[in-house]
Image 1 (tube, rainbow, N blue to C red):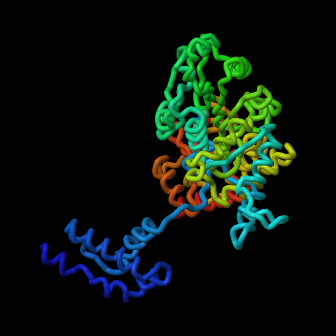
Image 2: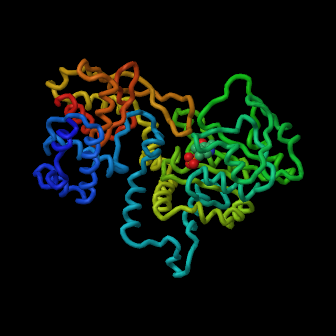
Image 3: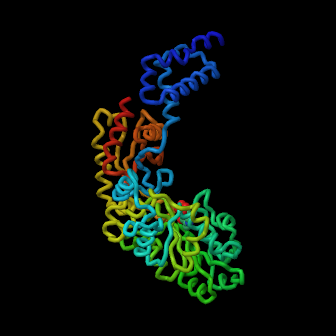
Length: 460
Ligand SMILES: *Cc1c(COP(=O)(O)O)cnc(C)c1O
């Protein structure tokens, strides 16, 4: 039988010459197709299953699947999870203005490090620094790869070999790779924990100060809440302590909101401006969380502390490229006029989308599905909650509307899989054994794509 199976396996050349598989060589590079064929044939040899039909037609989907898996890269996805800052789906989507700026500066050369008026070599961060200072009230600023890099670099510069005083309630983990105590160790700073998980007083910080104290660090509890019997020290009080003892105070803000969200009926999230007003020496924050820009981290604050950070050799290793600078500049420029930021930055727009708009999108998805397809499933609109995600507004649920799908033909897990394997992939939620599509995070242009995907799945 073994001999029979081996004999029935076609050769690579036979397959390449077949009409079905030769189509693949017009889509994919020939060598990659050859490798995929070998892989599929090897699998058959290894498993020795008596596949009676090893015709090119039967092998075509297997080979195509291998090719797709090998060559699939980052692609556009539809986020119907309702998690606005979804790290898996690339965190903040960019504003049109930022996307356009990326196009404009990347197709040819650009003035990354040159001063066009004088023709002299300029400082890569000059323009963006001015913009950050203008928006936040900082004296000086720097952009690096992400906020994790910003924290590492600031600690390395200001506190290497020195003690950093931090409340036990601020020793946060943001996601597997970012744990405050580990970042501190990596930077060569010595961690001095004060207070307890729920209560830390000013005197705790005060009592911990020694000759070797390099920094007082406050960290925003961006992805969790401590409620009940609690006490934390205001930034203002930490600042006066720092000033009398001549120790810099740094605040890792995490999300870096530039707009007061409370004004728009949303929960409180500390803004960068408010920390600057309190006189903080250094703040660090992400540019792809609430700020709504590309991945990046900003270090901003008093010149006295930011200038040495700029000169740290590590800065060169953590510097950002022109793509980041272009997209971030364009995003920040929108903040010069709050109304423009709210209207054009997708993250802000999504948080503030009124329920009626979301409801309309739900109805469109439902109505676009043909009546023949609709008989295979139960399509309805239900209430639910969206989430900020990405370490902002923890525990705060934003009311939303969702399309709920129930079918006797396909169970929820299979349906979610099929949606994810559509083109473009659609990411949904499963709740109470039903697939749910939160239309808060779905763009208007994507609504029809969802209906079409449902149509395809249920008609095949
Ligand atoms: C998100 C976050 C970080 C890490 O920022 P990245 O930009 O993801 O590197 C660090 N500190 C706090 C408080 C955060 O919320």
